[in-house]
Image (cartoon, rainbow, N blue to C red; front, side, top):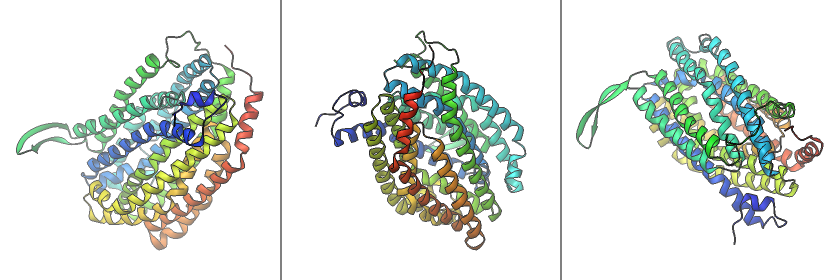
Length: 479
């Protein structure tokens, strides 16, 4: 059977058979999935490096992890406010508009990241105290967070360039650069976390230089990897991309309509991620008083679970591009078809991943940390959550598809109802009786509820009607 490209499917009277459209979904998803798998492996190595320093080092990073997730999600919301518009413009064949949107996004995103940087620096000392961290981990947690926020403009540009390039339909280059970012992170960490030491290799011993920065070295290593890969990504977008490159004559002037659409997409996402991550911070505060071992086990369990859900996020990114370009091309039928095909693919892959992780997680935790108590508790809680992987996948990919249609308000409401109404309330009820397993039981129940809510939203089709209503009444952005 002949394979079709996304452009051929969008702009042909015959959109191809169902298997041909599924091939398009798979073709766009595979590069991102491979990049996500690479990122997971590098996260495991990264966590193992920090874990070798002891439970305190892992706990100090785990303490501020929810806050760094919040900031990262705000960065992503800002980026998608513009990159979704890029997908619509590319789908409509208007490359000039796509280039103008991208240029305006750089200016707006830089300003936004500087605001986040200032806010982060202002709370760097008090944040670990607010999160009820143990006294012995406060200093490391503060140092890690400080380094993280100082490099936020770099992260913002990296995320913006990556999502914009993906929304043009180029998944391969962002995926390769994502892998480069992960590998360079491990390399930088290898030299920055540990002190100068003697290493034996095939019977030969030699000295390896190291900065011996510990937890701070982990933050600095990750920051350096973003700088290195970000430079390569800027070249790929600004020079090599035939759609977004800077060599054209497109204006850098701010257009009110572009900014209005960016706010309409980004603000609900930002509010949603803020409320969700605040809920995760509340969960961290619920876990923190349980002690250093449960806090470290919680942090490692979150890292281990990434093996299952990161492929879902890869497919979700592809769904954003597929649905976004379909709507830009005026293809209602394809937008709906791609949304469901991507969701089915995500559910299948994450279900298989969950089954594999159920049996492999003892080995994963043994790799991540040498502390037996952390290993045993981590395995116990992760196996509880793995029961939610199929419906968790549905929520992830549906979110990506709805985002491609510019539908971000309804998903935000669904996520907030699910997280605050289900997870937090049940966690508070169970933590006193069951400890950390009670918190993860609440997570499992909530993720299943969330998946059902998103499937209902996708099935009703109101998101599609609203997307085409906006497309009909939206004036063209100025030249």
